[in-house]
Every structure is written in structure tokens, then in C-alpha cells.
Image 1 (tube, one colour):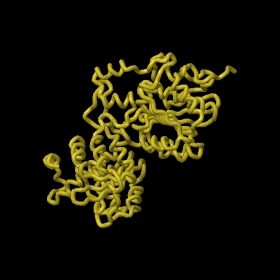
Image 2: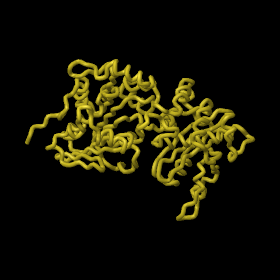
Image 3: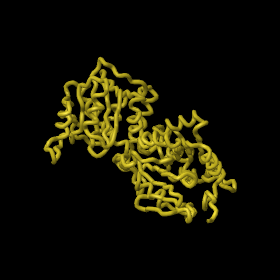
Image 4: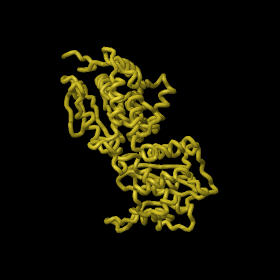
Length: 438
């Protein structure tokens, strides 16, 4: 049998070689590298080596399944190589292009996964290693659910990405920064990476060309200098969240038993349901809790509601809760009421564009508990416009991803806020003039 030399068909640059050596020593690692640094290619070399050393299932987790099929599975790099050119042919038993699955002759398997797919499909599986690519724009629940499994199997997890504001990735980065005995952390800007001849991978000239081509400066700092301060491009609430943090309105926001508690829902039957728990005092809206889960029954959410130590005044749900099911002839509202949730108010259908604009203006009155609402805050931070790659511009509509549901629920919360702080208004008469007056 031919000898195995890894990395295969890949000459590591100095910084990549250093990372591969350290990745051999650490179970958990984060590579925060600039654009064009070949962070995924480097991490794949390490993942493949681990798969050959220990038989098991290895997950390569991307934010979106089909998008990253193009970026990883079908991609050809500047040297004319695909990812499969780095797999020795005598080690590859088979690959499945449809499911993006690689099986090695020793029985190990690398499975490509997108966090936009049904998360229940992997619950109960037994991966020994997870590699997360571009984690800042992925659904963080995929780390929450995998973490207990990985802990049992030896705590093997790597993250490779370029920063996108400060959301869930920042929390993991801080854990790594404070636990250097357990985590390997590498942060490299365009000024830190060189090829084997001592030349910069991305030169100052290249960066200046990007500026001349009207690349946004925040994006440039993010992509080439791994800036933590630049927000996700096209993020709707980036400025508002930054201001709220500055004014300590994202902090500890305790439940006040003297105030009524309300909930605002974005309810889906075959998708994620998100719920904000909030109280109102004068013009302040205090988000004291947040809950989000996928593919659960209505009974599950009612149980969660009842398990909280809150005194509820009303539950606000979107208009489609009144749509009747063909099988039963009853609506979800009626079913929720049969489960004991009788104080339901239906929020009328709103323009997404006007609702987003209104939430931006409401933010100055918003207080959010940083611990109980962590996922909700991350969702609001990540909620952004859809990008048109062909025309290289942002569409005037939100990207539907893991952040959408909590953001939609916040729009419904705004309607409640308007009506509860304006006694003479009626929930069913919210108009554009009210949006302009807010």
C-alpha cells in the first residue's frame, strides 16, 4: 500500500503549517483569518487527518447547505484544484454528490451539513468531530445541540471564519481567549500572512484596489483586518444594538412582579417559533426573556409559557394563527385556547419594510436582558438584507434564515408597544401615520 503523506497535494504556507501543527495538539480551535487566507482549505486538511486517525463521523457544518455546495463541494481554487484533489484516491472509498458525503476506506465519514436544514435530522447522531465554517452567520443552536455529544466523544470542535459584528461567535471567541490551555486561537489579518517566498498573500496594493472599486470601508476592515467592530453588512438593527449596548440597555433586566407580562410570537408549524416575553413601564419596553425552538407542537410552547414564573396579561400572535386547519376545521388560536391559553390577541398583518423601520425607532425605548434573551439579541444582530450576488447589491427584503423568526416576533412586539403606550389607539387600526409619529 502506498505511504500516506498529509496534507496531500497541498503545500502549506508558514502560517498554515503552524496552525496544522497546533490543530494536532488541541481539541478545540478557532481560526479567525482574513479573506483569501484559505482557512477552510487548511481546516479540511486537519479534519481529513483526524478522520484517518480515528474512525467515526465528522461533520463539516456551513451556514447554508446549497450556498456552500458551490463554495466547498463544487469550488475550484486559484490553483485549479477542487477539495477532492486533496484526498488521496486510494483512501477515498466513495463520495455522494447529492448528500455531500465523503467515505474513507477506514470507515470514517465526513458529512457536509447546512444549519438552514432541519436540525432534528442530526439529533441522536454521534459525530466525533465538528468543523464549523463561517459560524457568525450560522444558526448557533447547531453548536448548542452538538456540544453535549462532542463532550462525550472527547470535546473535538473547530471554528473557522471571518468576523461578522459581535454576536454568538464573539462569546465562543472570548471562551477561547480565556482558556488557552483548552483552546487554540489564531487571529490573522492581511498583514500577518505570507507565502513560502516571503510575499504577502494580500498586498496593500490589492486592498487599495478594493477601496478604489468602492468596497465599503467597514467591510474591508472586517474582511482583511478581522475587525470585530464592523457589523454584518446589510444588518437592519446594527446601529440600534450598538447604541443600546453603549447605554447599557442590553444588560440585566429583571422580572418585575408588579407589572403585567406579555408575549409576542412568530408562530410556525413546520419551522421555528420565537417568543419574546416583555413588560411595559411608561414608555419603556423591557424584554425579560426569550424562547425559540423548532419542530415542536403547540403543546410544547404552552408548557414553556406556563412554566415561567410570570403573570400574563395577553399573548400576541400573528394573524395566520386564525387560519383553520383542513383536517380539524379549527384554527391554531382555538387549539391554543383549548390548552388553556385564553388571553390571545391577534396582531394584524403588517408590511415588513414599515415594521422594520418602526422597530428601529422603538429601539430607543427597548431594554433587553442579556442572558435570558441572548439568542434573541444574536438574531436581531444578524437579521440582514438579502444579498444579490449577481448584481452585487442588497435587495430591499430580509434574508430568511435562522435570525428571521425572532426578528419577526419583535415586529409584532412593536405593534403591542404602540397600542399599550397609546391608550386611545386600537390594535386593529395601526396605520402608516402611527409609524411616522413613533
